[in-house]
Length: 421
Image 1 (cartoon, helix red, strand yellow):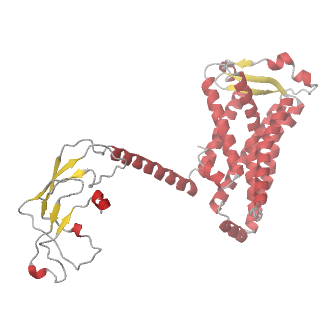
Image 2 (cartoon, rainbow, N blue to C red):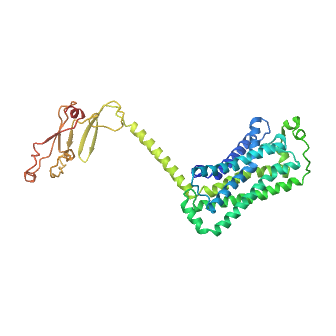
Image 3 (cartoon, rainbow, N blue to C red):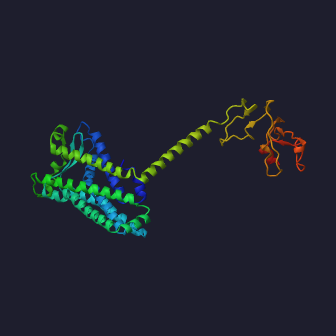
């Protein structure tokens, strides 16, 4: 759900929100796979996958707060009228800074955490693999303190943004009217999302620091002691009956699992029902309907090709038409009367009265649109078509400059005859 608004945020080059969706969606997908694969078991079935997953978990410790920092930094630049990027190089520079914050900081966190890593990973039944840290003094500095520090920087940007908006309301409105990628509603939603993230990051990060500080903490002595070959490579497997009955372990694992889901729902709540989101939903709906309609039309046309030479009859309003359909398929699905149909006879019932109107003669007029009262078939060949005789009009109604309609005949059009002429 958090990945649904990804396209139009990428189209507007909102780097912070795009990275927020990417990290949150990746974390939710990873936790979903782990819950399915290790449901009811704790087997070490995919060591390489477990290594990758545990490193992503370490990156997620700071990835979402870092994305929130990118969003708050961008909002502050907009509020201070510094967000309009005149040149392409300035726009690229801003994107590179956001990438260094949203991707570079999580990579640095993975490197720093490996210094205090105590086990390769631990597998919890019904949860999956989890990274393991040695509870030493350096762990607080290299792992637990990062989210709180990033959250505090985001909080500073957020406070400055609110203060600037209250002070420069008119200039902010002019800025919103000149920026097509960031309207007022989206700006307020981004601020609300960042504020919620800050209010969640700082208290939770502080709680884990205090909680782990109450445990027996040892000092980091050496690399070899922390990364002992046999102890570090040993994979611990914890059954669900053990960690679920330990409140601290259960609260920590379940909090890590469901906080990612909460982040995804919060983001979708702010941006999944916005005006641009509803507009894109309508475009997708219309596109699907048009594709389904065009597919049905092509199917109906493809099935309407002539496949039989047997004649069939149609009658409507006292007119009976006998149509003989030629065999064979054409490349075009439209039926042509000149090369697929032969009309031997058209008969009118006696109670049908001709209805016609004679107008001033013009060479551009189409006489073929007149009403037909009798049809005399001629020799059916490629160059001779049936002759159509126009109805007889009262002599007084015929203008002097028109030919006598009683003697006028019209031959059916033939493409081969036209070519021959």
